[in-house]
Amino acid sequence: MALPRDLGNLGDVAGGANANASFDSGLLFIDGINNRIGIANTTPDVTLRVTGSTSISGVLAVSGNSAVSNTWTVGTSSAVTIALNSNGAIVANGNITAFGNPSDINLKENIVPLEGTLDKVATLGGYKFNYKGDSRTLIGVIAQEIQQVYPELVYNYTNLQEEESMAVMYSHITAVLIEAVKELKARVEELEKQPR
Image 1: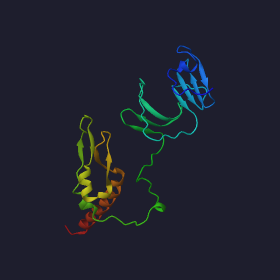
Image 2: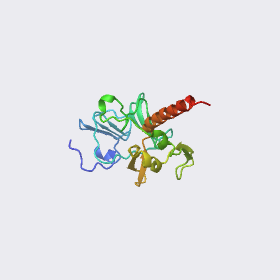
Image 3: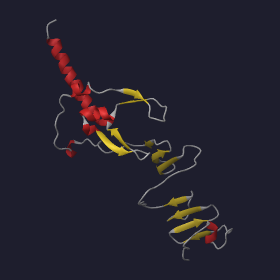
Image 4: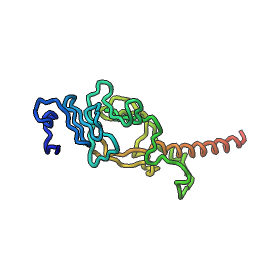
């Protein structure tokens, strides 16, 4: 049976607008009784079930009405590996390795120790703040301040409102703070050697 160009209602596939029947082409399965579609799956348990590797070119828009969490998940119902919540939070059951986080020395070249970190850190501020339109209090730094002393730690991105914004690679600040503490320790030790 050839697949109609415009499927219309699922019941139309079976030959009548109210016919609660199924259609199976071997690749596409339509369950008109439960209003479910299976691609390479003849027993879809949700509205759309795709079995096998899937590639999406373009924009994937995901929405839902789950009374529990309105969450898009990757994995199985019993073993979710990553979830994207409607509030923008990403939750994973394992480590997340993103741009800039791999730290194996075998991946690096041009390794140069940081110098003068204590004076640079002294120019930076730590702040309590909230994002515009969000009353939650957070703690962090200001990207523009970081950019003045460590431009490598700041990058531009397009935010959800499609505006250009600046972001900070917070995990990389650790290296700066480690070296600043070492410089401070050396200064303290020098002062302790002086007669009182």
